[in-house]
Image (cartoon, rainbow, N blue to C red; front, side, top):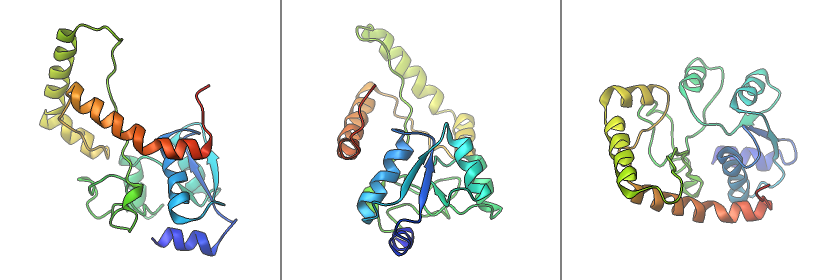
Length: 187
C-alpha cells in the first residue's frame, strides 16, 4: 500500500486525525499502523469528524481516518482532499472509483461502521420481532436506500436480531486485539 510505504519513508513525521479516542476510526488507524509496521504515526483525537476534516483541509494534519460521507466525497471529487481507500468490504455504490483497502493490498484492514438498535434485556420477543420487521421494511425502501447511498452509507436490509448478534460477535473478535494492544478500557 502506497501510504504504508510513505509512512515508513517518513518515520516519526506523520500524524492522523480521528473523531476521537476509541472510535472505530481510531481503531482502524491503529490497526493500519500495526499491519504496516509504522508504530510512530501519531494519533490526533478530535471532538468529532468535522474538526478533524477542517484541520485536514487546512493542512494542520496530513491524514485522517474518517467515515466517508457525501461531503467528503464532494471534497474528493473537487480535489480538495484525496480518499486513498475505503475500508468497506465492497466498493461504495456512490463512489465505485474508490478502491477498497483489500484492493490496495490490506484486506485485514477492512472495517465498516454499523448502526444497531438495542433494547433493554427482557424486552418481549414479540416487540423485538415488530422492531426488526419495521426496520427491515424501512431499510428496503428504495427512496431511503437512495438517500443513504447519496450520503455515502451502504444500507443493509437484514435487520434480524440474529444477523445483528452475529455481526456484533465478529466485530468484538476483530477489534479485541487492537483494543488490548492500545490498553484501552471503559471508564
